[in-house]
Length: 306
Image 1: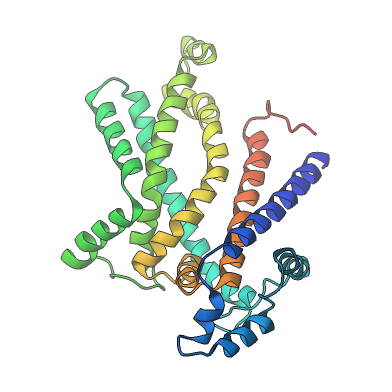
Image 2 (image 1 turned 60 degrees about the vertical axis):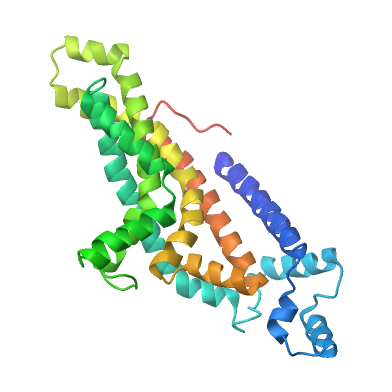
């Protein structure tokens, strides 16, 4: 419990730091959100009135203190452009993003771990080389390029999946694959290295000498140890997902917080940008915490230290 309390305290401090840095960067933006709200034809007096109503004419630290106090009370602010509560806008979009993230994780784990295991078991063969080339290509390919290629081949040319939208399993396949391709490449390479290292250990050789079946050695002895680095990586990987979601949701018209953030960036809607950033930071911190808590359950030799 002491370990969890300490991690929660550190997580809270990290979120405070993220809020301050993000607020400062948005404050320094050359774009003027008031001008976006008022429109091009607005007079200088109208612009100043709106600026005063929003409190954007006050010093930086006064603005941040007001925002932070509202944040402590659970208020993420109100959208400048959509004139709605940011928390309501994010809550409406979050289920779609969580669904896409979960599907992307499934894709990258299923294909990434499978490729890594096969490559490790076929180490030094043509199969190993082909799979590593595939993983390198997956890591190097930009997500928007992958998304557009998948749309062109499987939606436009073959007509197997819809071009965009949300609501059915068919709508989910291409965005999930696009989101999972990058992670698939990383996981396959990491799983291959981890599995090769584990298969060299003395306890694996001992198990073989005892005549244990190959499947038993693989499932009971090799996999639990080889997968430990992968679990730690999943927690860190949530941050990559949150950044990738913006691109993927924009390409496929997926109605999640990534698309909401992209629209807010185009309109300089600062409250929404702040809200999405903080929600993403919370997801990253929570993912890392869960990875630390799950690891000892898989390997009892690992103990949480206060």
